[in-house]
Image (cartoon, rainbow, N blue to C red; front, side, top):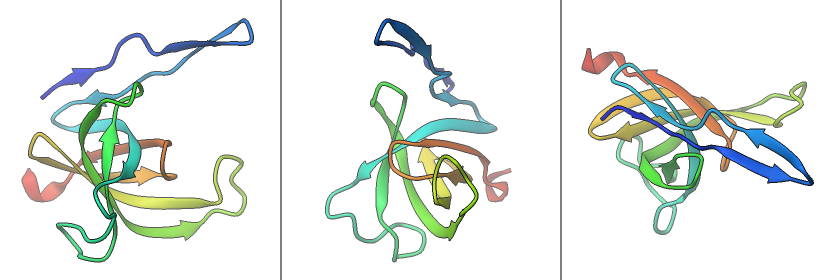
Length: 114
């Protein structure tokens, strides 16, 4: 699946803001970390972190993901934590980083599939 999201502009207090939106290619992905799936417990890969939806900018589900590890980023102005995230879209596994629910996730194809 190759996917490039379109029309990612909102208007707030008379100003327009545009996001790049989600992008899915065979080599890399940009998406947004969504809400937990079901009870939020367990995952396919490690059994101890919660599976989540992976969405585009408009909230459409494009795959699933899970947070495998988290560390503090005290000097960041956007979030106090960073997450290592694994995602699956159309049977392809990606790995990368993001800052949590509602935030952008950028990843590349896992080497084990090359």
